[in-house]
Image (cartoon, rainbow, N blue to C red; front, side, top):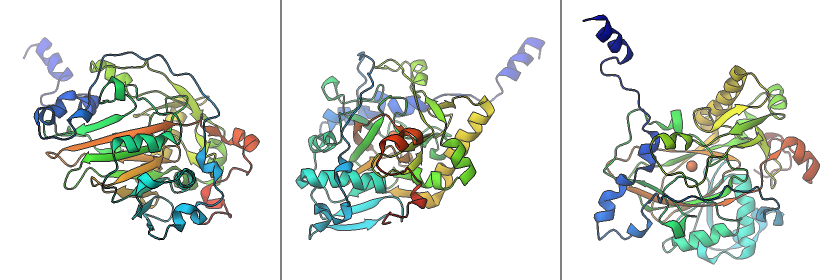
Length: 383
Ligand SMILES: [Fe+2]
């Protein structure tokens, strides 16, 4: 072997290839080819497309509605007074399942109660929604604010750009190393000035098993920090950048120019007044903490992200079926998809409402009627 080939082999070790197949897997339109050709598939009009269109940058908006603030106590409200309702908590602090209620029948007051419930429980899962359409989903989420349009994910069409499509089929297997605990934990679109608040999701086609979504409480993540660390991180802000920067390299269409946003590391939910961590990982979209040396910034982000990813006390796992509608409050929960269902099809739709700019502890002290606190230290809470 001459010197040149020896050097080449050092640069490219045999059998080792470094790839970035993350966005190709999530966003590839070829993943839906089989469904697109299947004339029997009843949701072919909701398969993902990636139109080459450009939207103007979003402008910061304020004074968005906060329906949960209209409610004193959702447990004593109209929804929970329905004689037919069945509910059970998925864990003491996160997630409630509701059955025997037709989501299409919620009154305006009951939707406000749902907003308050989402702020407190983080995740609310409605089972047995046999006739709940995507239009119904859009109408429900509209109650919680203007609809969010994702800058790069698959959408059914230009006209339905407020519907985000999740699709994986038999054509694509999750790439080696595509594991949830490493790359997938996140909250949606923190790089927006007005990130999504209430998010809804349903699966149009669910695999027989697998493809669960795992949720982790930001309130519990904050509670898991020591008082001294809480006091320090309460004061910090972080910059968030979209992971879709990588998508440019993969020749994907970015419909809105990449943006970034600075938000508090610890945010206060305007309905509960509880503090939640609002960073996940430097590998996802939390770019860095302002004013800290890079190593301290990375250490803090990764530590808080690690607590959210690994503290099973703070987590619940949602198993999907095609009659389930889940809503979560993106401001106080993180989530992770699982990709263990190949070769089965998983086809879902998400509709989200944008929320007010996340509230810092300092701003919450000036604007909220109650002193911001951690969930664990709130002596007034019921659960
Ligand atoms: Fe997500």
